[in-house]
Image 1 (cartoon, rainbow, N blue to C red):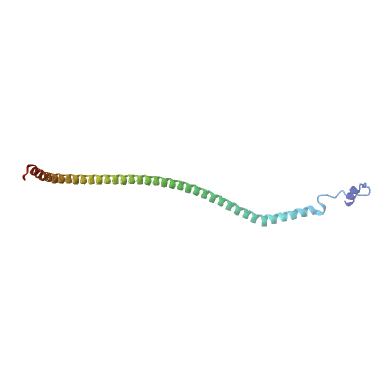
Image 2: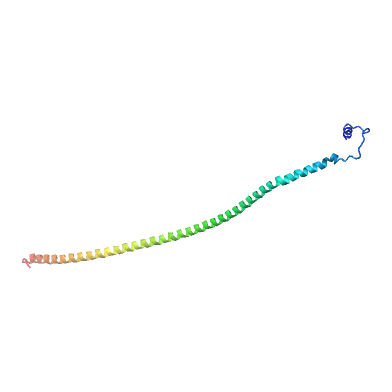
Length: 165
């Protein structure tokens, strides 16, 4: 065989080379069978000792991923629920704030109206009291004037007549 390779490499004619008709190229000295057996042993060792831990690790990883996905979905649902609850709470708080604001405005208006009415009543009372006092003062002044006028008229008439009346 080496002679054949040498003759092909050197371009010599294979005149002195005898060919072996019994030589099978694929199975010289049962090498191919030994390689197949060794491959089967390596394949068995890989299948028996390497594939199970790798498959287990992959299964664990897949379980973690699916757990993470379900946790993520649950968290997303909880977030959506919390967001909806927040929006509802904010809407309720806004409505409550508006209601309280309107209530405060109504109370303010009622207090202002009540204070204005009380002030008006007090002013009316003061005006009435003042008018009564003024009328009383006027009556006293008129009475005092009448008595003074009659005394003065008597004195004046006495001076005009010369006698005391």
